[in-house]
Structure formats: C-alpha cells, structure tokens
Amino acid sequence: MAEPIDPPLADAQLTAFVKAVREEPGPPARAVGAAELRRAQRLRAEVRPPGPEMAHVEDLTVGPAAVGARLYRPSAGDGPLVVFLHGGMWTIGDLESHDRACRRLAAGTGAAVLSVDFRRAPEHPWPAAVDDCVEAIRWAAAGGVAGTAGPIVVMGDSSGGNLAALACLRLRDEGGPLPAAQVLLYPNTDLTLSCPSTRSKATGWGLTTDDVAWGAEQWVPDPARRADPEVSPLHAVDLGGLPPAVVVTAEHDPLRDEGDAYAARLAAADVPVGHRREAGMVHGFLTLDTLSPAAAAAGERLFADVTDLLGGRHVR
Image (cartoon, rainbow, N blue to C red; front, side, top):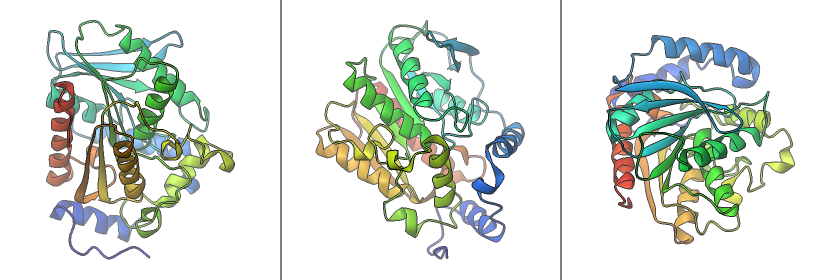
C-alpha cells in the first residue's frame, strides 16, 4: 500500500498528479513491454510544448561505432559542453523524449549539449549502452564537437545517471579521459534494489519499484550480475579518483536512498560532491516542468549547479 500524501508535495499541481496516478495507475511496465512503452512515450513527447529556441540543433553520429546523438547550441561562439545521457529504465527514452529537457539545460547553462542516443535493452543488453556512452565522451574529449571550449561535464537522469556513473568508473579504470564533472539526477546506482526507499516508496509516487526491476531485468538478464560494480556503481569497492559530482535525489522516489548513498560514498572517497534531496519532489521531475512549477524550479536549481561546475566551482 502506498504511503499517504501527507504533507502535500512540493506544489498543488504535483499533488494532483500523484493523486491521479494513484486513482488510475495503469498496467505495470512488465505487462506492457518495451515496444508499447516507447510508442506511448513518443506520443507524449509529440504533444509536449517545445523547449527554448537554439542557435543550432544538429543530429549527428559520433565515434567509430557511429553512435547517434543530437547537438544543441544555445548561442554562437565557443563554450563548454554537457554530454547528456537520458533516462528510461535502460529500455525507453530517446532523443525526442528528452529534447525539451536538453533545450532547457542548454538555455539554463549556456553550454552546448550533446544528447546521446545509446543502444537500449532488451535488444541491446549491458554493456552496449555503457560502451556507447564511453565512446561519446571519448569522442567529445578528443575535440569531436567543433566550436566548444572549456570543460566537458557528463550528466544523466535516472538510468542515464547510472550510465554516467558507470562511464566515469570505466574511464577512470582505463586511464581517461575523465570529464571535468559528473551530474547524477535521481540515479540508479544499485540494481539489486536493496535500499529501504525501494520498499517505502515502492508504489504510489509515479515510478514503481516493480517497473525499475523490470527495466533492470531487461538490461541485465542474469540476476547474479546485478550486484556487479560494472552495472551497480554503489557496489564499487573504490570510488576514489572520480570527477567532482552533483547528485540530486527526490524525496518521494524509490531510487532516493541509493542516490543518497552513492553521494555519501563519493564524499567518503574524497570526491568533491554537491548533494541535495529535493523535498516534496518525485522521480522524473526534470521532464515534469510543464506540469509543475515546483518541478520546473527544481530543474532550474540543477542548471545552476551545472553552471557552477562549468565555471570550475564545486557545489556543496
């Protein structure tokens, strides 16, 4: 049974959204399947208001494996770059689902944004997505994005946050090049789903723990592998030597505790970390900005964090 909505969420609109989800939760992801989930997500993206206008938007392929990507430039002239890895339980999400979010990110930070269209499960299980994300970061670090100068930051939301963390770990272990910073927004860090919030926030808040479990099953079919640090960064023995991080979690999110725990582990390993738990907020708030002014404001706070990182300032 879901926890009561008491006190109310961050604003009335978010409270109404969660109440509506509780009244009509819809079928679970495992009953719908990846193909139908993707179709429904495409329809939602088509009716979403467009994001801010950009000076230039270009679809391209990156690296030797020709990974798909979309580049957003908020203005003419050189500037820093954010490599963005979208969420979607490793199975859904694409360039269109996060187009508005990437435009907001570029407009809010002044940085160019490279959104990576990595391969998804179940067609392409682990490690395909990590391979693609590492390749995109390497390509960007080698100067693949003309007209950018300054630091490169890698950022991901939800399962994209998992991929960002895993890419940083792999690049550290392989000798780089490491991004200047990593931004992890309500990230998956423990595919065993062992943290307390996976039980206390399992249903009734939008994302369900069972949906996350289904996504993890698609991406890592072998259950014995889900505690491997190569898929669950919270299980890594050593987090030292990783880039400075911003980790933002949401109060009413089954992934909350594993994100909080990863931030604490990074700090214990002497990695500079800015960590914030957004009060009264739910998973996925980055793409709920048209629904909730509070979600939009939480996104703006995140963009300010990214701006500080791009300026060489650690966020605490």
